[in-house]
Length: 260
Image 1 (cartoon, rainbow, N blue to C red):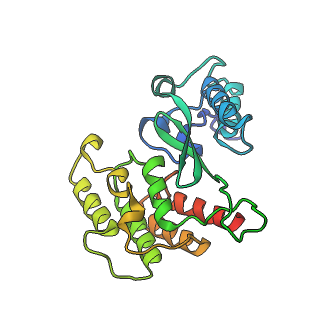
Image 2 (image 1 turned 30 degrees about the vertical axis):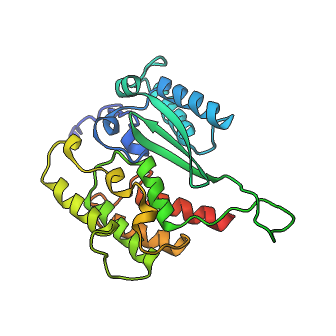
């Protein structure tokens, strides 16, 4: 008589696709399943700003995840994630330093960010008055971060990225006393001793007016973006960068400079 083998369950317990599975978010939102009505709200918000949903954008990703969750029977068609319903799904547009910044968020956490130039009339000597766009500097990218991720508490990864950005902007490895990098490092150290986010020093406390706080500045390049991203990754225990954060903003500036 052959030995009877242990029976395996016919189907394994499925888990819904959560926000933390596809977006760089944290806290309660990261644990929540992406629901169909969340995706619908983001699609509506994107359409209002862009005129249509963006290919590969947050609405598209959310719709794909929500559809899979619904087909698996893990969420209902009318479901809304409580935190999204309570705190909102938003697409905001801001114009700063000649750039149009569009930020997509759920419950106050950034899921995606777009930076587009706002053309200005060329100076005398330009090619027949064709629109020109001045390159985005590292300092301007840091100032943008104060808008896109300003409410984020300063962490060591942020401070490291700001230091790398300052070094590249100034061309000097010497940290300016009282400058952006020194202030960011001090803020991150203070925050480590605090438990409540509400008490912590935020990115916008340090990065607002960043261009004026740098002794020198330069146009952001791909090499600058890679250096800043490496610093942020290296100092984050999870080896990730923050959506809309320092590395993301410098990378967006570099991409825009290359395309203009």
